[in-house]
Amino acid sequence: MKTLLIKIYQPTAHYRMPFTYQRRHTYPIPPYSTVIGFLCNMLGIDNQENEQFKKLAVCKLSISGRFEQKLTEYIWFRNLSKGSHEKYFGSIETRKKNGEINHIGGQSPMRIDVLENMHLNIHLAGDENFLLDLEKYLHNPVNRLETVHLGRAEDWLVFESIQLVDLDKSNRDKNYNHFFWIPQHIETDETFDFDFDKSEGLFYNLPVFATIKDYNTTYNRHAERSFSYMRSKLNDGAITGMEYLYDKESDVPVFLADLSCSN
Picture 1: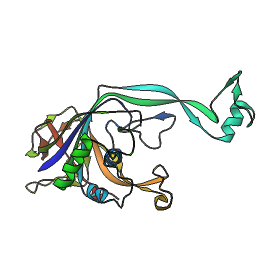
Picture 2: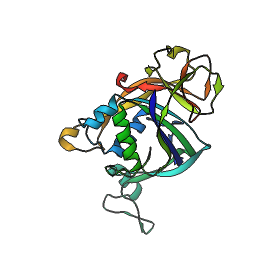
Picture 3: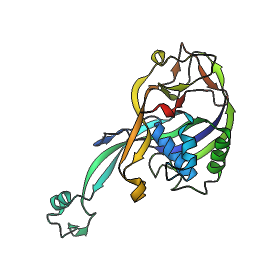
Picture 4: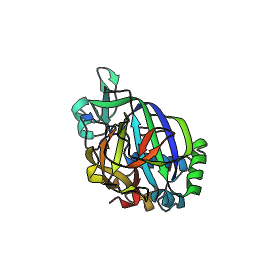
């Protein structure tokens, strides 16, 4: 089976877990929705009626990676709440505090988890012509919507490799020292069956595709979103007692999520 392999390096990365606020936790590797958003940016897809998006939506996606260390940083979280502004400045009409003009609204200290020296393997299987188009736009993103990033806008990246690779079948027991998403709905070779219940890992409901509220009338890509989800397991590298697809080029198992099965 041929797949497009995208190897990415990020000096720093944060893939925020939803519903974490006072301390913003990160997934150890990006969820499907983050990678899909990255690919949409690179292809210039700003509408789900786009033909390129329809081709992306029926692809199979695998994500794995490793990082050097996780740090926790302090940042200022700022808001534009009138109530927070009045509480901090004493009046809605002023922005001076101790003789200096400050940020409008309010601010509070917050901790955020940051991954250092992130290495990612993204495998995408689908229509070969679409994969070749994607490879072209990754090398030369002339249609990109925003800066080239993955996760936060400030988390820039370097492409270590972009190439088509063949996948083989393997049943070797090994600790690959990578994190893997093992999805409930998976693309496998016809010669073996995959048993999600026998795979090792912590359960997650991962976001996949986003529906943007009122997009057809506002064309605001940053408006409120609702997501479809896929049941998955986060594996920390030890793969035992199972058959799987294997990328010899990167020496990693590949667990291709069938994105069309998200709900």
